[in-house]
Image 1 (cartoon, rainbow, N blue to C red):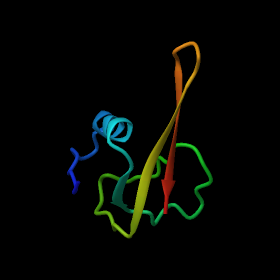
Image 2 (image 1 turned 120 degrees about the vertical axis):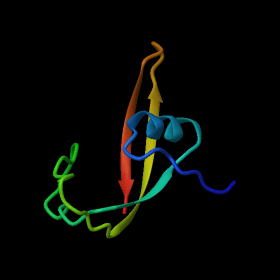
Image 3 (image 1 turned 135 degrees about the vertical axis):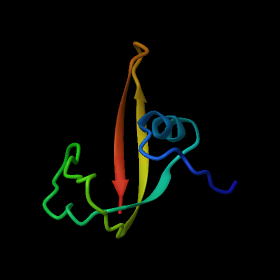
Length: 78
């Protein structure tokens, strides 16, 4: 038990952790999320300082088909 620090901005490390260990809690800059309704959020400005102002939990749900393929759904819980 305890915690683990994942590499910053590493999509594959995040997916591996979600699939093999479990949910991730993190801090995010959610100031621009006010008009966000779904899909991939791409309103990040990496050139300026960010104001980290929310804690969220990232969860993955994987559905394995009988054919051996799978689909994944990500959820962010505020």
